[in-house]
Image (cartoon, rainbow, N blue to C red; front, side, top):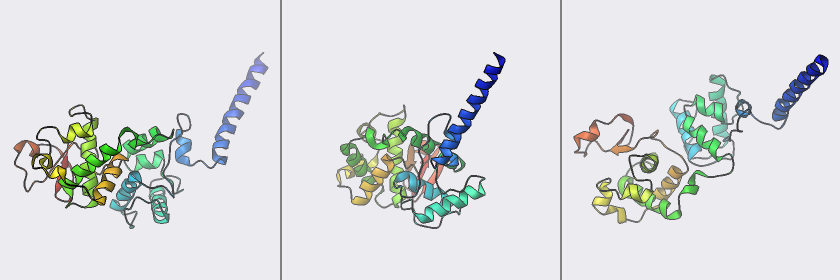
Length: 244
């Protein structure tokens, strides 16, 4: 009986090793292997595009690992930058951004978002084309003079409010909340958004958040509310201060 039990333990150990080896043989990265006991982590790799890629590039560029354009396209230059970052941070330099790489970059929320999308769902599936258009209108009205990143940031604040229990839970509810946005009060919300604002809205919906979760922003040169100056500042992009 004891001999049979020992044989069973050995067989289980061999099977476990075999499963791990199979993962490597299928081409999975070290980032994915780390997540194997739970749910396979989705990854960003060469050929990917979108808001998450832009945020990845932005962080790598800010820290001196990447010198290319923050264009949301995971090309060869981004691959090399990721490899460089991975080498410097003790990760397998495979040029693929998975869970471990995101965590090292401080993009834990992005890693969670990737995990939630690994089954094929999309972060943008919760919003309609009308939502995207309204978001673009607000971005255009509030931030058309800002950089592209600054416009995405305004969109991200609106979406962060949608997710916050302190605000309405729809894009239209947040935008049209009384006295929430100057552009609504003065009528600029009715201007037609340009292509840049539309792209910025889509990037924000896809998950790019240059504000790191902020729910407020203001221009200190024109803001008159003493209350807003008391909010904790997280980052400044162009003329806008973003706060929580």
